[in-house]
Image 1: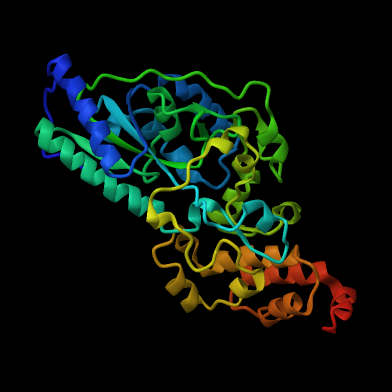
Image 2: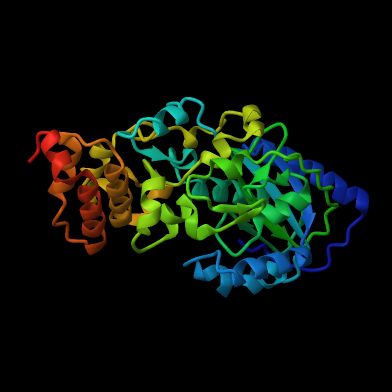
Length: 370
Protein backbone atom coordinates (compact mmCIF):
# COMPACT_ATOMS: atom_id res chain seq x y z
CA UNK A 1 0.00 0.00 0.00
CA UNK A 2 1.49 3.33 -0.95
CA UNK A 3 0.78 6.59 0.80
CA UNK A 4 -0.54 9.63 -0.99
CA UNK A 5 2.97 10.96 -1.39
CA UNK A 6 6.35 11.27 0.24
CA UNK A 7 8.68 14.01 1.28
CA UNK A 8 10.59 15.49 4.18
CA UNK A 9 8.99 14.48 7.47
CA UNK A 10 11.56 15.61 9.99
CA UNK A 11 8.90 16.94 12.37
CA UNK A 12 9.40 17.88 15.99
CA UNK A 13 10.47 15.04 18.30
CA UNK A 14 7.58 15.69 20.66
CA UNK A 15 5.15 15.61 17.76
CA UNK A 16 6.52 12.30 16.50
CA UNK A 17 6.42 10.80 19.99
CA UNK A 18 2.78 11.79 20.28
CA UNK A 19 2.12 10.22 16.88
CA UNK A 20 3.66 6.92 18.01
CA UNK A 21 1.45 6.95 21.10
CA UNK A 22 -1.55 7.45 18.85
CA UNK A 23 -0.39 4.68 16.52
CA UNK A 24 -0.22 2.26 19.45
CA UNK A 25 -3.73 3.24 20.52
CA UNK A 26 -5.15 2.90 17.01
CA UNK A 27 -3.42 -0.45 16.57
CA UNK A 28 -4.96 -1.67 19.83
CA UNK A 29 -8.39 -0.65 18.62
CA UNK A 30 -7.78 -2.68 15.45
CA UNK A 31 -6.97 -5.84 17.43
CA UNK A 32 -3.17 -5.77 17.58
CA UNK A 33 -1.74 -6.71 20.97
CA UNK A 34 1.63 -4.95 20.63
CA UNK A 35 3.07 -2.27 18.37
CA UNK A 36 6.66 -1.03 18.21
CA UNK A 37 8.99 0.86 15.88
CA UNK A 38 12.41 -0.09 14.48
CA UNK A 39 14.90 1.59 12.18
CA UNK A 40 15.10 0.02 8.72
CA UNK A 41 18.70 -1.08 9.09
CA UNK A 42 19.27 -4.75 8.31
CA UNK A 43 23.00 -4.61 7.68
CA UNK A 44 23.75 -6.92 10.61
CA UNK A 45 21.41 -9.58 9.21
CA UNK A 46 23.10 -9.70 5.81
CA UNK A 47 25.95 -12.12 6.56
CA UNK A 48 23.61 -14.56 8.33
CA UNK A 49 21.14 -14.58 5.45
CA UNK A 50 23.84 -15.06 2.81
CA UNK A 51 25.42 -17.93 4.77
CA UNK A 52 22.01 -19.60 5.18
CA UNK A 53 21.37 -19.37 1.46
CA UNK A 54 24.85 -20.62 0.55
CA UNK A 55 24.25 -23.72 2.68
CA UNK A 56 21.12 -24.43 0.64
CA UNK A 57 18.88 -24.42 3.70
CA UNK A 58 16.15 -22.63 1.73
CA UNK A 59 15.52 -25.71 -0.42
CA UNK A 60 13.10 -24.95 -3.27
CA UNK A 61 12.25 -21.52 -1.85
CA UNK A 62 13.97 -19.90 -4.80
CA UNK A 63 12.46 -16.52 -4.03
CA UNK A 64 14.55 -16.40 -0.85
CA UNK A 65 17.72 -16.22 -2.95
CA UNK A 66 16.16 -14.27 -5.80
CA UNK A 67 14.94 -11.51 -3.48
CA UNK A 68 17.80 -11.52 -0.96
CA UNK A 69 18.85 -8.00 -1.95
CA UNK A 70 15.32 -6.72 -1.39
CA UNK A 71 15.18 -8.34 2.03
CA UNK A 72 18.34 -6.58 3.10
CA UNK A 73 17.50 -3.20 1.57
CA UNK A 74 13.91 -2.23 2.49
CA UNK A 75 14.29 1.12 0.73
CA UNK A 76 14.04 -0.82 -2.54
CA UNK A 77 10.54 -1.84 -1.51
CA UNK A 78 9.51 1.59 -0.24
CA UNK A 79 11.83 4.35 -1.50
CA UNK A 80 12.73 6.74 1.29
CA UNK A 81 11.40 4.49 4.06
CA UNK A 82 13.32 4.78 7.33
CA UNK A 83 11.12 2.96 9.86
CA UNK A 84 9.18 -0.25 10.31
CA UNK A 85 6.08 -0.19 12.48
CA UNK A 86 5.84 -3.81 13.65
CA UNK A 87 2.62 -5.25 15.07
CA UNK A 88 1.64 -8.51 16.70
CA UNK A 89 -1.73 -10.29 16.78
CA UNK A 90 -2.32 -13.37 18.95
CA UNK A 91 -3.83 -16.43 17.25
CA UNK A 92 -3.80 -19.29 19.79
CA UNK A 93 -7.24 -20.99 19.39
CA UNK A 94 -8.03 -21.79 23.01
CA UNK A 95 -11.26 -23.59 22.12
CA UNK A 96 -9.53 -25.99 19.72
CA UNK A 97 -9.15 -29.65 20.61
CA UNK A 98 -5.95 -30.29 22.59
CA UNK A 99 -3.01 -30.21 20.17
CA UNK A 100 -1.02 -32.95 21.91
CA UNK A 101 -4.07 -35.21 21.97
CA UNK A 102 -4.48 -34.84 18.21
CA UNK A 103 -0.78 -35.52 17.62
CA UNK A 104 -1.11 -38.58 19.84
CA UNK A 105 -3.98 -40.05 17.81
CA UNK A 106 -2.56 -41.33 14.47
CA UNK A 107 -6.05 -41.61 12.99
CA UNK A 108 -6.52 -37.84 13.21
CA UNK A 109 -5.04 -35.14 10.99
CA UNK A 110 -2.96 -32.48 12.69
CA UNK A 111 -3.27 -28.99 11.20
CA UNK A 112 -1.00 -26.23 12.46
CA UNK A 113 -2.89 -24.06 14.93
CA UNK A 114 -2.39 -20.92 12.85
CA UNK A 115 -4.34 -22.42 9.93
CA UNK A 116 -7.44 -23.63 11.78
CA UNK A 117 -9.35 -20.41 11.10
CA UNK A 118 -9.38 -17.79 8.38
CA UNK A 119 -6.31 -16.79 6.37
CA UNK A 120 -4.27 -14.47 8.57
CA UNK A 121 -2.81 -12.69 5.54
CA UNK A 122 -6.20 -11.22 4.71
CA UNK A 123 -7.11 -10.39 8.31
CA UNK A 124 -3.86 -8.61 9.17
CA UNK A 125 -3.48 -6.89 5.82
CA UNK A 126 -6.94 -5.32 6.10
CA UNK A 127 -6.24 -4.11 9.65
CA UNK A 128 -2.82 -2.76 8.69
CA UNK A 129 -4.33 -0.88 5.76
CA UNK A 130 -6.76 0.78 8.17
CA UNK A 131 -3.90 1.64 10.53
CA UNK A 132 -1.85 3.12 7.68
CA UNK A 133 -4.85 5.22 6.64
CA UNK A 134 -5.21 6.58 10.20
CA UNK A 135 -1.52 7.47 10.22
CA UNK A 136 -1.93 9.24 6.89
CA UNK A 137 -4.85 11.26 8.19
CA UNK A 138 -2.77 12.41 11.15
CA UNK A 139 0.64 12.88 9.52
CA UNK A 140 -0.34 13.98 6.06
CA UNK A 141 0.97 12.60 2.75
CA UNK A 142 3.90 10.24 3.22
CA UNK A 143 5.37 7.09 1.71
CA UNK A 144 4.25 3.83 3.29
CA UNK A 145 3.39 0.20 2.52
CA UNK A 146 1.89 -2.62 4.57
CA UNK A 147 3.25 -6.17 4.72
CA UNK A 148 1.98 -9.45 6.15
CA UNK A 149 4.31 -12.23 5.10
CA UNK A 150 3.56 -11.03 1.58
CA UNK A 151 6.88 -9.64 0.29
CA UNK A 152 10.62 -10.11 0.89
CA UNK A 153 10.56 -8.62 4.39
CA UNK A 154 12.68 -9.85 7.32
CA UNK A 155 9.82 -9.51 9.74
CA UNK A 156 11.38 -11.37 12.67
CA UNK A 157 14.55 -9.27 12.41
CA UNK A 158 12.53 -6.07 12.39
CA UNK A 159 10.22 -7.19 15.19
CA UNK A 160 13.29 -8.14 17.23
CA UNK A 161 14.87 -4.75 16.61
CA UNK A 162 11.61 -3.09 17.66
CA UNK A 163 11.52 -5.00 20.95
CA UNK A 164 8.44 -7.14 20.25
CA UNK A 165 10.46 -10.09 21.50
CA UNK A 166 13.64 -12.04 20.83
CA UNK A 167 14.46 -14.69 18.23
CA UNK A 168 14.19 -18.12 19.82
CA UNK A 169 16.42 -21.07 19.01
CA UNK A 170 13.65 -22.35 16.70
CA UNK A 171 14.06 -19.01 14.78
CA UNK A 172 10.56 -17.76 15.72
CA UNK A 173 9.91 -14.63 17.76
CA UNK A 174 9.37 -15.13 21.49
CA UNK A 175 7.88 -12.87 24.13
CA UNK A 176 8.13 -13.51 27.90
CA UNK A 177 4.48 -12.68 28.48
CA UNK A 178 2.92 -13.99 25.27
CA UNK A 179 5.07 -16.88 24.03
CA UNK A 180 5.12 -17.26 20.24
CA UNK A 181 1.54 -17.94 19.14
CA UNK A 182 1.09 -14.71 17.23
CA UNK A 183 1.25 -13.25 13.73
CA UNK A 184 3.48 -10.36 12.69
CA UNK A 185 2.86 -7.50 10.30
CA UNK A 186 4.69 -4.33 9.29
CA UNK A 187 4.19 -0.88 7.89
CA UNK A 188 7.25 0.61 6.21
CA UNK A 189 7.15 4.39 6.40
CA UNK A 190 9.31 7.40 5.59
CA UNK A 191 8.20 9.08 8.82
CA UNK A 192 11.26 9.35 11.15
CA UNK A 193 9.42 8.00 14.18
CA UNK A 194 11.30 7.44 17.46
CA UNK A 195 12.42 3.81 17.69
CA UNK A 196 11.91 1.30 20.48
CA UNK A 197 14.68 -0.62 22.20
CA UNK A 198 15.23 -4.35 21.63
CA UNK A 199 14.77 -6.75 24.55
CA UNK A 200 17.11 -9.39 25.93
CA UNK A 201 16.72 -13.04 24.97
CA UNK A 202 15.64 -15.62 27.54
CA UNK A 203 16.17 -19.01 25.92
CA UNK A 204 19.19 -19.64 28.14
CA UNK A 205 20.43 -23.24 28.00
CA UNK A 206 17.02 -24.64 26.98
CA UNK A 207 17.05 -26.88 23.89
CA UNK A 208 13.51 -28.25 24.03
CA UNK A 209 12.57 -26.97 20.57
CA UNK A 210 15.70 -28.49 19.03
CA UNK A 211 15.09 -31.81 20.76
CA UNK A 212 11.39 -31.90 19.86
CA UNK A 213 11.71 -31.33 16.10
CA UNK A 214 10.46 -34.59 14.50
CA UNK A 215 12.76 -34.31 11.48
CA UNK A 216 15.81 -32.64 13.03
CA UNK A 217 15.26 -29.46 11.04
CA UNK A 218 16.68 -27.19 13.75
CA UNK A 219 20.25 -28.14 13.01
CA UNK A 220 21.72 -25.73 15.58
CA UNK A 221 20.42 -22.97 17.83
CA UNK A 222 18.88 -20.25 15.63
CA UNK A 223 19.58 -22.29 12.49
CA UNK A 224 16.77 -24.00 10.54
CA UNK A 225 17.24 -26.29 7.55
CA UNK A 226 13.95 -25.65 5.74
CA UNK A 227 14.46 -28.76 3.61
CA UNK A 228 13.77 -30.90 6.68
CA UNK A 229 11.07 -28.71 8.24
CA UNK A 230 7.60 -30.27 8.19
CA UNK A 231 6.03 -26.86 7.50
CA UNK A 232 8.19 -26.57 4.38
CA UNK A 233 7.55 -30.17 3.34
CA UNK A 234 3.77 -29.99 3.69
CA UNK A 235 3.21 -26.40 2.51
CA UNK A 236 6.05 -25.06 0.36
CA UNK A 237 7.43 -28.17 -1.33
CA UNK A 238 5.67 -28.72 -4.63
CA UNK A 239 6.95 -32.19 -5.49
CA UNK A 240 7.31 -35.50 -3.71
CA UNK A 241 8.13 -35.52 0.00
CA UNK A 242 11.47 -37.36 0.49
CA UNK A 243 10.74 -40.90 1.65
CA UNK A 244 13.14 -40.70 4.57
CA UNK A 245 11.10 -37.85 6.04
CA UNK A 246 7.62 -39.28 5.52
CA UNK A 247 7.52 -41.47 8.62
CA UNK A 248 8.70 -38.69 11.00
CA UNK A 249 5.93 -36.45 9.64
CA UNK A 250 3.40 -38.69 11.38
CA UNK A 251 -0.11 -37.23 11.11
CA UNK A 252 0.97 -33.61 10.50
CA UNK A 253 -0.80 -32.77 7.25
CA UNK A 254 -0.39 -28.99 7.18
CA UNK A 255 2.48 -27.40 9.05
CA UNK A 256 4.00 -28.37 12.38
CA UNK A 257 3.87 -26.82 15.85
CA UNK A 258 6.10 -29.14 17.86
CA UNK A 259 8.80 -26.54 18.53
CA UNK A 260 6.16 -24.16 19.89
CA UNK A 261 4.13 -26.73 21.81
CA UNK A 262 7.16 -27.69 23.87
CA UNK A 263 8.41 -24.14 24.50
CA UNK A 264 8.15 -23.16 28.20
CA UNK A 265 7.37 -19.56 27.29
CA UNK A 266 4.14 -20.61 25.61
CA UNK A 267 2.56 -21.35 28.95
CA UNK A 268 2.02 -17.59 28.95
CA UNK A 269 0.37 -17.51 25.52
CA UNK A 270 -2.86 -15.54 25.36
CA UNK A 271 -5.94 -16.89 23.54
CA UNK A 272 -6.81 -15.16 20.29
CA UNK A 273 -9.19 -12.25 20.70
CA UNK A 274 -9.95 -12.29 16.97
CA UNK A 275 -13.00 -14.38 15.98
CA UNK A 276 -11.55 -14.94 12.50
CA UNK A 277 -8.99 -17.35 13.97
CA UNK A 278 -11.63 -19.64 15.51
CA UNK A 279 -11.68 -23.25 14.26
CA UNK A 280 -13.52 -23.86 10.98
CA UNK A 281 -14.81 -27.13 9.48
CA UNK A 282 -13.70 -29.20 12.48
CA UNK A 283 -10.07 -29.05 11.38
CA UNK A 284 -8.84 -29.24 14.96
CA UNK A 285 -9.63 -32.97 15.16
CA UNK A 286 -10.76 -34.25 11.75
CA UNK A 287 -9.92 -37.80 10.73
CA UNK A 288 -7.39 -38.50 8.00
CA UNK A 289 -9.88 -40.73 6.19
CA UNK A 290 -12.55 -38.02 6.19
CA UNK A 291 -10.24 -35.33 4.80
CA UNK A 292 -8.74 -37.68 2.20
CA UNK A 293 -12.23 -38.30 0.88
CA UNK A 294 -12.76 -34.65 -0.08
CA UNK A 295 -13.05 -34.05 -3.80
CA UNK A 296 -11.26 -31.11 -5.39
CA UNK A 297 -14.57 -29.20 -5.43
CA UNK A 298 -15.17 -29.92 -1.75
CA UNK A 299 -11.65 -28.80 -0.91
CA UNK A 300 -12.14 -25.51 -2.76
CA UNK A 301 -15.49 -24.89 -1.11
CA UNK A 302 -14.42 -25.73 2.45
CA UNK A 303 -11.01 -24.09 2.29
CA UNK A 304 -12.26 -20.81 0.82
CA UNK A 305 -10.86 -18.06 3.02
CA UNK A 306 -8.30 -20.42 4.59
CA UNK A 307 -4.51 -20.30 4.30
CA UNK A 308 -4.66 -24.01 3.43
CA UNK A 309 -6.32 -23.31 0.09
CA UNK A 310 -3.01 -22.00 -1.26
CA UNK A 311 -1.42 -25.46 -1.49
CA UNK A 312 -4.28 -26.83 -3.58
CA UNK A 313 -6.11 -30.17 -3.46
CA UNK A 314 -3.22 -32.14 -4.99
CA UNK A 315 -0.66 -31.29 -2.31
CA UNK A 316 -3.32 -31.53 0.40
CA UNK A 317 -4.01 -35.09 -0.82
CA UNK A 318 -0.27 -35.85 -0.94
CA UNK A 319 0.08 -34.84 2.70
CA UNK A 320 -2.96 -36.83 3.78
CA UNK A 321 -1.65 -39.91 1.95
CA UNK A 322 1.52 -39.68 4.04
CA UNK A 323 -0.58 -39.36 7.19
CA UNK A 324 -2.61 -42.41 6.20
CA UNK A 325 0.60 -44.32 5.54
CA UNK A 326 1.61 -43.61 9.12
CA UNK A 327 -1.83 -44.47 10.54
CA UNK A 328 -2.75 -47.84 12.06
CA UNK A 329 -3.80 -50.46 9.52
CA UNK A 330 -7.60 -50.54 9.55
CA UNK A 331 -10.21 -51.42 6.90
CA UNK A 332 -11.15 -47.74 6.66
CA UNK A 333 -7.58 -46.55 6.12
CA UNK A 334 -6.69 -49.17 3.52
CA UNK A 335 -9.98 -48.68 1.66
CA UNK A 336 -9.53 -44.90 1.59
CA UNK A 337 -6.09 -45.34 0.04
CA UNK A 338 -7.22 -47.98 -2.44
CA UNK A 339 -10.02 -45.71 -3.68
CA UNK A 340 -7.37 -43.25 -4.86
CA UNK A 341 -4.72 -45.69 -6.03
CA UNK A 342 -5.47 -44.58 -9.61
CA UNK A 343 -5.73 -40.88 -8.83
CA UNK A 344 -5.28 -38.63 -11.90
CA UNK A 345 -2.32 -36.97 -10.17
CA UNK A 346 1.00 -38.81 -10.45
CA UNK A 347 2.12 -37.06 -7.26
CA UNK A 348 -0.86 -38.36 -5.30
CA UNK A 349 -0.56 -41.87 -6.82
CA UNK A 350 3.09 -42.12 -5.76
CA UNK A 351 2.32 -41.20 -2.15
CA UNK A 352 -0.74 -43.45 -2.06
CA UNK A 353 1.39 -46.32 -3.34
CA UNK A 354 3.95 -45.66 -0.61
CA UNK A 355 1.20 -45.59 2.01
CA UNK A 356 -0.36 -48.86 0.81
CA UNK A 357 3.06 -50.51 0.83
CA UNK A 358 3.46 -49.37 4.43
CA UNK A 359 0.35 -51.30 5.35
CA UNK A 360 1.38 -54.28 3.21
CA UNK A 361 -0.54 -57.29 2.05
CA UNK A 362 -0.30 -58.93 5.47
CA UNK A 363 -1.62 -55.78 7.11
CA UNK A 364 -4.49 -55.64 4.64
CA UNK A 365 -5.37 -59.25 5.41
CA UNK A 366 -5.25 -58.56 9.13
CA UNK A 367 -7.55 -55.60 8.61
CA UNK A 368 -10.02 -57.72 6.69
CA UNK A 369 -9.34 -56.00 3.36
CA UNK A 370 -7.53 -58.57 1.23
